[in-house]
Amino acid sequence: MSQIIRSEIKKEVRKLDSKICKIARSFDNVSDFPTEGREGTIYIDKSDNSIYFWDGSAYTPFSTVVASDIQGYYALLSPYYFGGVGTQMNIAVEDIDTWLDIEMVIDPLGLSDFRPTDMQSASAVGHTGDGTTGDPIVFTLEGLGLSASCNFRASLSFDPDEDGGRLDSRMYVERHSAAVPSDDFFLEATGVSMESGAEEVYANYVNIQFFVGDTINTIGPGDAGKIKFQIKSSVAGVLSTNEIALFIQA
Image (cartoon, rainbow, N blue to C red):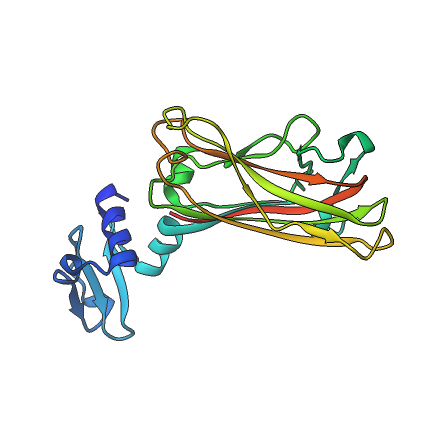
């Protein structure tokens, strides 16, 4: 699909652009549409009020275009969702109060790639790293522009060795090469106070929303922001990670 069509679709979704509305054409049924449509024109099937765009070779339903071009998600699931358990990571005494990259083994069936079209075109895979020690999972934001926004989600639990601990988490954000300022930055999530003692396993459902803006957007091939997930505990214990995912509004 051409960049002209993508641009006009985004205007319709976000702004209800009046110029586009002026070139809408209505027909009694989709079978009455012209054999060949025009780029930039909305075609309305009055029998069910469905909306179509001409993609250069065929009429494309508006809902399909929105799903593939405007929004999507990229999810990585551990064996927890396939009859197994989440990836366990031991937090030793020497790791206390230190920010650590999470470890998570991705199940062979655990990759769901429904990123918007521009992201898939920019990068065949949406992450690097295999989630083992020293090779953390890093999400790439390549393909996203200034106006995009995302919602990062993680599902984990912590089994502390001691009473009275606290578990914190954050998103580590790496800027693109031309960003000013150039330093990496962090977005912290709400922490979990483990007040019920060491006899309980504490579930933690992390949700971090952020906008892309001009320091982690895409400025060239292979040059865009990147994010990874980190945790910090005030006590030793075992962290179990079930899932990490990125929900995207392009």
